[in-house]
Image (cartoon, rainbow, N blue to C red; front, side, top):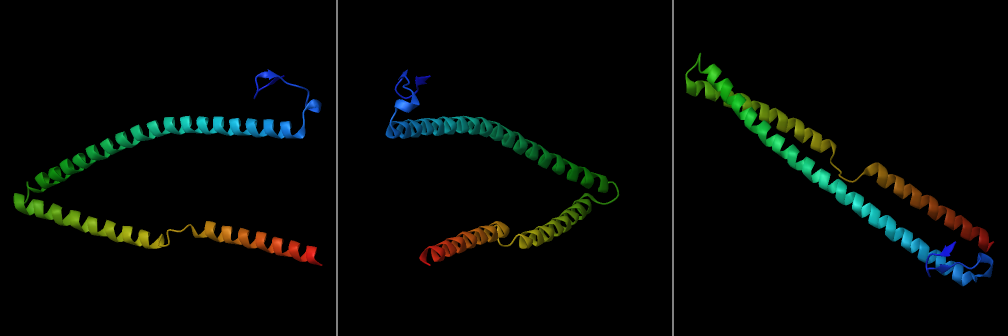
Length: 147
């Protein structure tokens, strides 16, 4: 096997000093970490490109849905205008939309209140418990050494 770091034939491990082995291991681990980071970066760039395109297309679909909803509202106004004056038909549709908007806003407010503390409470409690367990173990270990 060739020495990866020095690009020379490797000496048998038994002939290498501990310092040389540790240095080679550190260099190889460093190279491995750099290569893994480069791979992760390339993967994230590719996924980011797809995510950006997806978000753009999703936004475009949302805009088209918004215009479709506006057209549907206009169709309701025109339908009601067959039995009511046009201004009354538009007023009825507008009031119905405002009532729906108020209902959605109240439901949304209730959902936001349920999510009130934005801190992930369960995860924070778990971390606190882990810290307490490690601290307790260290204290017990220190007590055992002192006696």
